[in-house]
View (cartoon, rainbow, N blue to C red):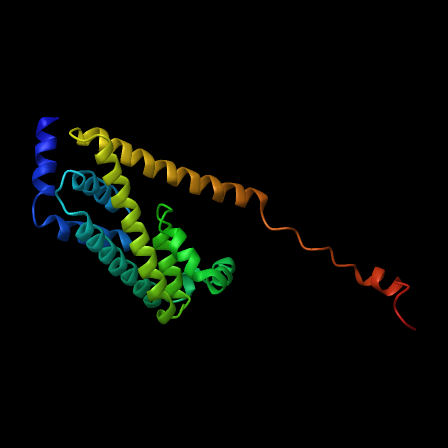
Amino acid sequence: MDGVLQLLHDVMSSPWVYMLIFTLAMLDGFFPVVPAETAVITAGVFAAAGQPDLVPLVGFAAAGAFAGDHISYALGRLVGRKPVKRLAWARSAIAERGGLILVVARFIPGGRTAVTVSMGALRYPRSRFTPFDAVAALVWALYSALIGFFGGAAFEGDPIRGLLLGLGLALSVTVVVEAVRFIRRRRGPRPPAPTPSPELAARSPHRGG
């Protein structure tokens, strides 16, 4: 355990930690198995003790997420509409609430990649995608870094407990988001009103003739 703590401390006190965070956040944009959020939370825990600095940590994490999302968006434009042409719900949802979906998807495991690729494939305007994605990346970076920071501050001198607290809080948020999505799916859309058959319509007393 002491060896692991020493290794983490060495990494987090290195000036290269910001580039590491940027790279992980960027890769996570189009390769969601990369543990970018865990890395930012861990760095936030150590930031509570002074290294790394919190402000550049947030900045590099947000910049990496922003760059990764744009790579994912570009990949979507490259593959075209065919892979998502059957997702009529995606087309209508992105057209109506594209910005909100982009921000919320940041907190759904794998969701951000699906959304950014779909936005690129469906030719969502880049001029609208970029500012919304800047907000999404910054909110995600702040959320992840601050969860770790407050966990580290709560258990000053015991970064492992601080990290466990931060990861627990992040997992709780994910569970809540997934629970809300599950409930919304269970409720489902309200079924459309039945259309009368031609025979009934012909017999309707409201028809003239």
